[in-house]
Length: 135
Image (cartoon, rainbow, N blue to C red; front, side, top):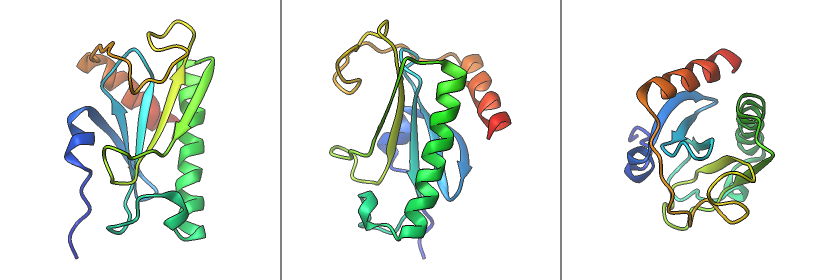
């Protein structure tokens, strides 16, 4: 059995924060948005939530809820967006994105926003520590 690997495109633009419930939790490297990715360890070919067993889907959604609560409490966005799209990266992954009327993509989608601002390593460490402390 081949060990699970997060798609290189997801890793290239993110920081890995933790592994929980057989999922990888990543922070997207764009400080304009509190943008987290949840990458479940699933079998090849499982790209969409309906393909998971009920038990695995419940486990993944439980983590989505926990990450959503963290983003809501820690960053205090006005709106929280959750999506499982995967048109460009076919590996199953879910986005949890905090939004405010002051972010550069508001009210549009974050995917088409050209505004990019990398996190400092100190800020990533702060977010990782807060995330691990709360979860």
